[in-house]
Length: 355
Image (tube, rainbow, N blue to C red; front, side):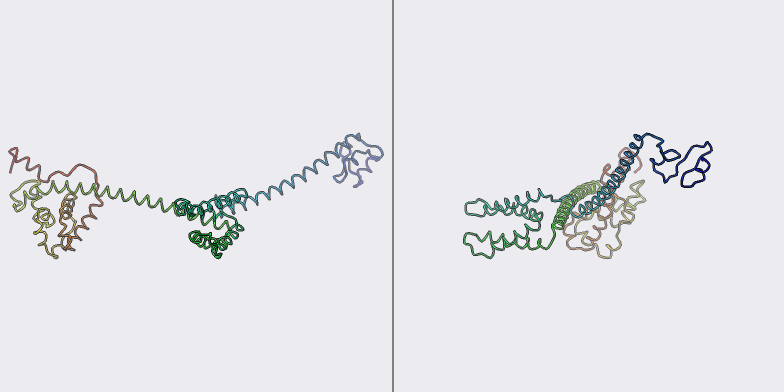
């Protein structure tokens, strides 16, 4: 009965509507049978379709498992390739490239030897040996060993047909090849790449140094020009107030006369060479750039740079000039030429103003 079937745990249970629900462990074919187990509840075609779909699902699960395994292996291989690429860099050598390298090496070596033969023209060692060494670095380990034996045989055999120049090249190559025999190819290539990068870096640094030197030279020329302009403007103004009592002057001239009276550095601008040589070490020690205006520093620098004899004999003058140049290094090189100190007062007197 339906109640008995519902009570049997192995036979399934019934819902409230009295319809049969099969247990999860029952197959589709068993569930398709009637309650008495005698006749199928669905056509055989549907059962066959179910079995086919089931097989396809199993195949898909197997394929997915294989795909996941392949993908995992692929990821591992990618990581390994990246590690190798870090060591080898962009100069990885494939099988085809390996043969091409060996062929180029043989052709280059033959060209060098032919150039050393009588009537072979100018030697090409200087031109082709760097290329030959580059190819040697890229050759596989077996070819390196073979070529080492070839070069050693050239050195050891007393073949009269082999010139001393060829033997000299063989000696140099055997040393290089001997060093390479103890180093795997990927390490040789990595070393070559580093040397090339170092060479390029050195070239870039040299170019930068040359550019910096050119800029420094240009700046020094501009500073010397400004120094000369400052001297041309300041020197006549100082001569005009030199020895004049500041109280007898007005405005900028009075200020300049007072500064000239107090600062030996300003009086040096108008001194002659013998007068400059009379300045003693104690006076030099009291000098400095503090309190001097930029154009005064420039004018004195220009004056001292013209005194070659003084600079050759006086270490104190050299120290003062170095101090002045350090001050000038922080000054701009552009701008209008400096005005003449006291020029306004001179112009006022020329126009009938106060003396």
